[in-house]
Amino acid sequence: MSRSVIVPVILAGGSGTRLWPLSRSLYPKQLLPLANEQTMLQNTVSRLAGVEQAATPLVICNTEHRFLVAEQLREMGAEAAILLEPVGRNTAPAVAIAALEALDRYDEPVLLILPADHVVDNEAEFRRVLLAGLASAEAGGLLTFGITPHRPETGYGYIRKGARLEGEDEVYRVERFVEKPDAATASGYLAEGGYYWNSGMFLFKAARYLEELEKFVPAMLAACREAHARLRRDLDFICLDREALAQSPSDSIDYAVMEKTAAACVIPLDCGWSDIGSWAALWERGARDANGNVLKGEVVVKDVKDCYLQATSRLVAAVGLTDHVVVETADAVLVAARERVQEVKAIVDALKARQREEAVLHRRVYRPWGSYECIDRAERFQVKRIVVNPGARLSLQAHHHRAEHWVVVKGTATVTNGGQETVLTENQSTYIPIGVTHRLANPGLIPLELIEVQSGSYLGEDDIVRLDDIYGRKDG
Image 1 (spheres, one colour):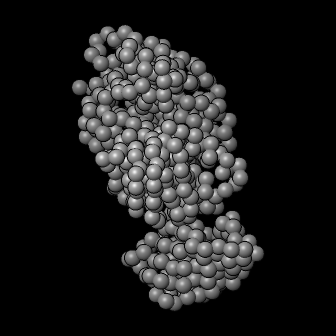
Image 2 (image 1 turned 45 degrees about the vertical axis):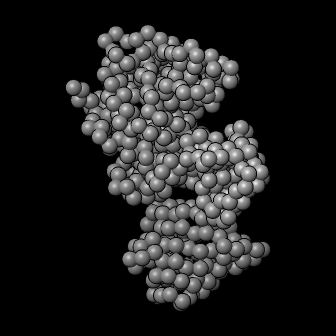
Image 3 (image 1 turned 120 degrees about the horizontal axis):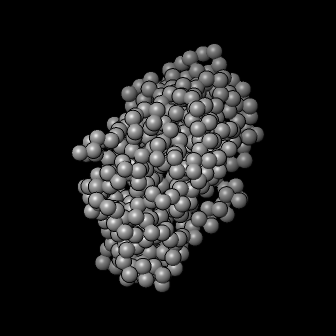
């Protein structure tokens, strides 16, 4: 039996724009519970249970998501090394960095590359196929998992399998990769057989991947080596060097390596896989009623058929809809024909062009110490509901343009206000004048909840002079 260490590399970057308004840039789909009670990231980590050779995962994420990722891993009691990308350069550089880190930790590690936003229904079959392909990876193959297609899907790229590898029962050479086809071509692939969906999951030796990357994109590997050499370890995070990583070309594993290498091989996988790439995909997977509807939250319908309707903060009522998607959040509502939900990305692009916060943030914003939610806002005031986790504290800070009034509604607060430190309990309050150094902490065992009223000429989140922060933040 093989003794290779398998290092799971979980790619947790990305913004999941096609699932807007539930998925936002600063709270993307991999951090959401879309398939079950766990988030998609947590499901990906759980999938590794039972793989005896699996080492501590390497999770690669954007710097902006670092505390959310760490908290979700902590919630499930999972250990992981979290690599932070200060600038996104696509999957090929991310995997190169992971390969370099794995080689520092283990002797001849095999990398298992897993996007954090996939669903696998039959995890036992996934693990079986993983181990069935391990020998090919150990022998120098760059293995990809080809999903057995069950419909003529136009949203995925395809892999055409070639000859079976000598001595292998389930592994084949890759004859070619195929871009996303039109409907007629996809139907032809399904009828012909031998074509598989490109899953974006891979298995290969770390050193072998770097060898092929150096052959095809040497500038990328050089930049990744420099970014890894200059990394710094900050709290529980491994922070890559921004300047060095920015010098790397941006490309995917497929384009940079897999479509060029002679070592590409594929193992078929039939495990109830989906990348949940759109609202239509969630409709297809969801529990539908007698009229073909997937209804989530407070939803009331009449004469509605084959629709996906989700309410998160208020009642949604629909009459006479067919083949539509309606998704409600506290600050935005999406209404789209189900066959056109891939175009939601264009809506997000338009919102970003208008600098609308709805493209980036939810009304509730998560921080390493807890969360805040804007309740009301006008020209010179803003009201927030703030929740501070037990034992957590905000940074020591000051504001140039706003004053703040805090009212405790639940729990106990330790408040630093200028040179004074006081303890506030329920129904007690304090006032923070403009420019005064202050800090809020929760010394208790239950969440601290308070109402914050801001007033002043400028109420933006960037009006923070951060003097001390236990989370190592300079901003955000």
